[in-house]
Length: 264
Image 1 (cartoon, helix red, strand yellow):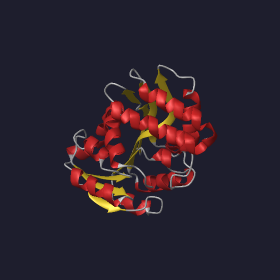
Image 2 (cartoon, rainbow, N blue to C red; image 1 turned 90 degrees about the vertical axis):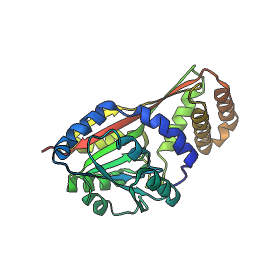
Image 3 (cartoon, rainbow, N blue to C red; image 1 turned 60 degrees about the vertical axis):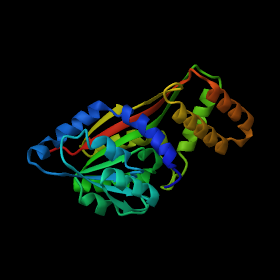
Image 4 (cartoon, one colour; image 1 turned 180 degrees about the vertical axis):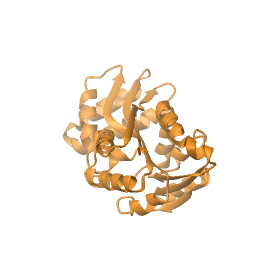
């Protein structure tokens, strides 16, 4: 998996952090309470860490000492992550790495904005490793297919439909789960008797305060739509330019956080 620029990851970190579910965070802190009381450090494995955004978000918000292992296939991003979080970076191809060996030494596995990129088979492999070693799993910010723009434009629905088709393409792990990712994980947790808490973690962007990131998002959506529908180039480019010129635009992008915990 590659292709995520540092500029985009820096822009989306703001949206990600303010979108995170406070209920999920509170439940994770409750789960950590016995470890905190015993003075134990919590070993955390972050899959697809990028520049370390998840570690930067969770470290000051979890009431327990954390020891991070950061995994990503991009060496440049890993270096940035290790420098900013103090985590131990592991350069690994997520599509091929031995998940069971990685998870065995950890109490908590985190994966942010990752599960919607992976295949059903890859998710099953991850889930088998998590359940085998009874680690908690926090999968945050999985895109769920919902996009709402205001004011509305007649071509918004076409862009959303093309984007959702694009999300199911191969992102390096086989045909991606895309918008079905969080529900696929929740079904596995319920199937195997684990507790699963799912909450919305929607991005909410406005042209005034989020102009740079919003422009990057609109352009990225247009590029994805063009890959699938080059015959609609004129309409897609016109939509992109209208949206970039809209000074009062607000956008909601649907995401979900899920926390899966082993029952005692």
